[in-house]
Length: 341
Image (cartoon, rainbow, N blue to C red; front, side, top):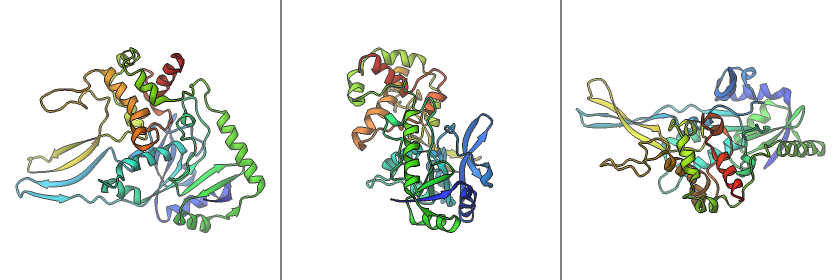
């Protein structure tokens, strides 16, 4: 990994250089919240945001995506080729970069790679940015507070400069052409370490650091805690909609007026939906909210880890903010802590 330094005042030039070849998507302010959106002016970008309302997942896995079109009269199927614009995701936090890496593990499985996901991913550059945690952040407990692979550039604020970690040749060439790039000095490295320590010290210490979470998920699988949690759940799927790592989807055929033509679409789905585990014949494998909430938490904190050697949850805290009844992995960690774990 290569490290360089640029002055903060050069950031607009870097954004403008990306805009010459790419659509730039970055965090912008919308009312009291922040969202990822396409920008036309570097001045609109807000890099000091706490977290965005939703993750940048939608730029790799759209909420609704056409897979192919069909003509029932002619009995023809046509592959749908959406034009995928070259894009830069600018200002992505480390937790979201780790979230994208988790999605890669699913959709780039060599046994059945997903061509639709690959088209978006291959057209996208990622520029990460350092951050300070909010009260709901617990990425430090999920080993997601740092981004190692997964980005083309990563900017760490070290005062009046950015320490830039370079992850790809393409991004490095754009950086070199747009900015006065310099080697990092000892003073810069000291500032970087100070920033890292300050960030670690800023995490909410009321969120317990629980060890052996997978074992505890098994040990307390039948605990009444899940009934209490499920009794609160509204089955609204807000948690899945804002989560950077929920990847479940449904396949639907949508007919045009007249029903002769239509399209097959992939749409987001969620295991908290009452119909998610229903099969032909009407049997539902998870009919109660308690079973659905437990399944969601189990997958986030144990199931994915057993296969991919890392937690699916990246500790971004969005679900804790979005949920109106205080259901999130934070509540599960606090439950384990109360049990003396």
